Figure 1 (spheres, one colour):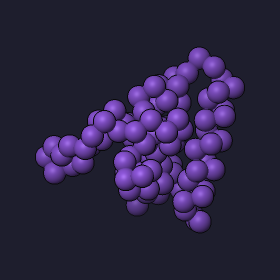
Figure 2 (cartoon, one colour; figure 1 turned 30 degrees about the horizontal axis):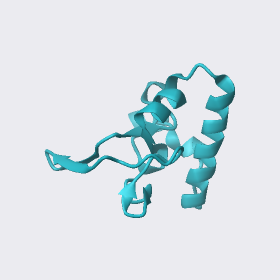
Figure 3 (cartoon, helix red, strand yellow; figure 1 turned 120 degrees about the horizontal axis):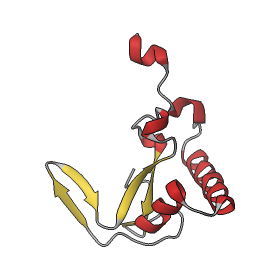
Length: 106
């Protein structure tokens, strides 16, 4: 995901363009300081932890996306994110982001 969301070699918030303050590794995992991975379909709504369900946001945009108090802006952000992901994945489908019962119970 980080490579997908890079601009000029730095991971950036896909919405406002704010760049990461740096890269660090912890227990073999890569992190970008100042950048959060946000779920399009949240985990509480059974969203999968897959690349097509995650985008890079700065903390301010992540807060607006998840808990903003301006419904119009939240809708605008969601439409932007969907278009962004559709632009990067030809087969992107919102339905594929949600865990289905058959995935859980076989």
